[in-house]
Length: 98
Image (cartoon, rainbow, N blue to C red; front, side, top):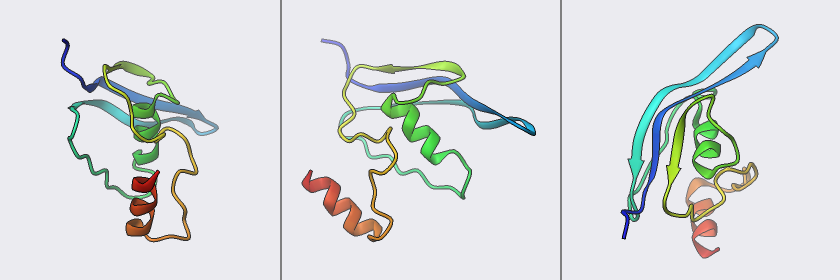
């Protein structure tokens, strides 16, 4: 049986804007195994949401590829999965109940 994982292979993501290309992620590579924990921190515009959409499969990378041999347990690729009116702790408890 093959090892379960989600692997990003040299993933980059760019968006075309009026001012030119906005390079959000550049050459990202890592592997997530079952039971791994991943924290994503960064300032506004750092690419956190883009990375989650890529992992969740709701967006495709501009370069590189993502290999998934396991499922994503929460629809992280979609906006609106967290309630802005709740604290991070309360959002986490809510998501865990689902």
